Image 1 (cartoon, protein in one colour):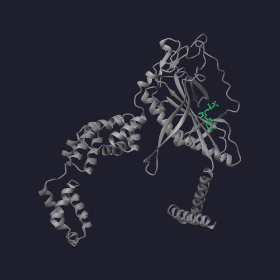
Image 2 (cartoon, rainbow, N blue to C red):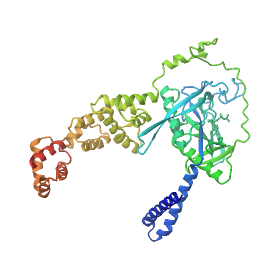
Image 3 (spheres, protein in one colour):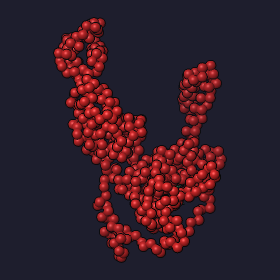
Image 4 (cartoon, rainbow, N blue to C red):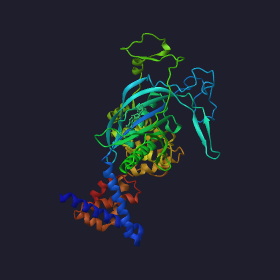
Length: 510
Ligand code: ADP
């Protein structure tokens, strides 16, 4: 019995010590006061963590993706992002009296295109995010809907204006079962769906442009008990905000219930500035939508070889088998191929697919170089992406083309330049002056020195300047050799062929 208590005490002593040290760094003489505050915070965080662990969270998503189409579903108005308000509105979109089909929002909700599907998505976990785990979420249904208008709030004049450009645009709604349990999982699932839609060409799914919007249903319950009352966080248009909104909502609900309160079945919105969710309206009385069949629209008939259609003209009939045959590789298949074909790490295959054009960039570089694909991935993901991210550029805007990168990697691979020199060349290439790596190497004199005579002279000079080290090595302390090699590199600004330098020094010192 005593052991766990003792261990806990020891942990608290350690935490207190750490807090004292931290507080001393930050607050000088006020340290003891600050340390108690820090200590209290640490204790509260630990208590919260163990308390949260006795709850389970459930997340179900409803996703609206704008389908790729030049025109709206039932009118000829164009679909276009950021057009002037109400510039893309036909009589029908504005539901003017007399237009048919009647001026209601039209949905296939009762007879969805697809039911009972699944979506597999993966998460990179572990210390260096280098372990990939795959999960599955059930898809309840997918249906076609019309988008509605958009309100624009003018706070200055306290009025709300309506833009109907979006009214009537075709959306596909994907309803997922509540199979996820965290913001991270939901964000990963949405990201995968986004990639699939983009690969199929059925939606551009650009979240920033509102082409993919997510409603997150969130609830918490005690493990083994029925699911709790859910709230719905509406209209989230970024994967990062989605994860944040869900995690905030889970914590908020636990806190509420722990404090004896209740969770209301309400609609909330995510305030990204403050990182919290805010109540919008409650849903206690279920929204009273009235559904009625739309007689002006012919049915859409989907069939496969097992369910040949009995009737309908060809415009209404969709052959699922034919569509299936023409499907391109989905993201998961593309990733598996990348790993199998090039032997790269699974988590790198995710990064390569995550940005539009990155995989193509990688494969173009590979075709033009002999370098091991794992090394090429390293250069692209670490050196290039790092720079592009820092400067807010996409791979398509990169001033370094695949062929220029391949040329640089070939210089490195053939031993004409060292790896530090290659990084220096890359720095120059970012300037976007169009200079080839070969030219930069020449201008900056970065080529490796591989002339044996020249290197022998340099080695001898270094040995002359470091007689103590030479004596040490002669006594058998081989570790000191690295110091001499370092000195040679210093003298040549990193341009000496390292293997050759080692060989020469060993010979001179033997
Ligand atoms: P309704 O018919 O009331 O709209 P659905 O069963 O269609 O409800 O579910 C709507 C969304 O809410 C789905 O995405 C579903 O996964 C999610 N959901 C349902 N129950 C819960 C719950 N208890 N916690 C979290 N999400 C839930």
